[in-house]
Image: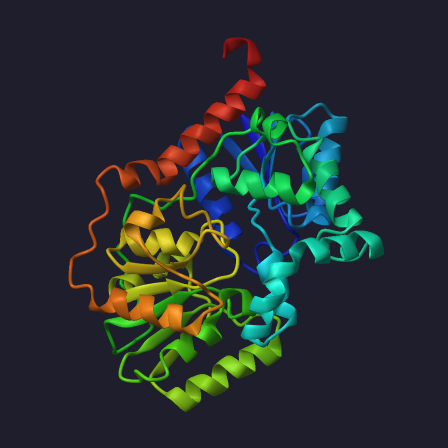
Length: 368
């Protein structure tokens, strides 16, 4: 079986969680003798129109993926979508309004914002925003969200009938590798039992609030791993406050295979984000025996990934909530004990099997 992968144009030079999801899905599908061709541009796909399946990732970049989708439909190639979608509302607010208290107040007025976005047809939830994504959904044969909650938010934001979409979808967990890397890279970091946060430095990831939450406990090291985002003023604020606090360490983008030791030496991993689905780094941290702090139900799929049982849950708008949950995770001396079955499901063997079965059902519908 030959399958084409396609995503946003900058997926491999502005790497994110979607990049890792693509590469790891590819790795484990190839173990099932699936021939995966990653298309980095439209021309790449033109050379592989004999493919059995097109699998596109990240509906947040419709202008990038729609040409692949429409070309596939023209040539009768079934299309699978991994939306990698979540409610962007809070992330949009926090990127525009740096005052977190004001952003929290405005977050209650999503319905009002949606009305104005529709009238002026600009930005998130505008008519064009909805139309461009619905055009893709309408040409998709099957959808593989990373959680049931993700599908709910997708349907709400795009005004889609949930039952209709549910009938052509199944959840595929974001996951970790059961194989453990033997690379012991730690960037020559000489501290342990630190607060770790892995992710691009940007308003959505909320690193500034993590630092603010830990200002009164400078003896506890904080380690950030991730490249600087495009919001230079936010990056400058993070750097300035870190210098004022002290005992904060930064590492630029670290290759995925080298990240393991950062988790192993951490006391707690914090992802106090305004949007995650669910945040691959949280699962990786859990897999390395690290306590984790995640944002609540509005901000990531807490239920699907059973974070009520396995994580400390904070409100990313609240510095005190972030502080309380970080300190609780640090003071928790009970070894992290994830249920034995947890990573028997939330691993890439499972993800690859569900994905492979979906491909087979589309290529050989009469055999299923």
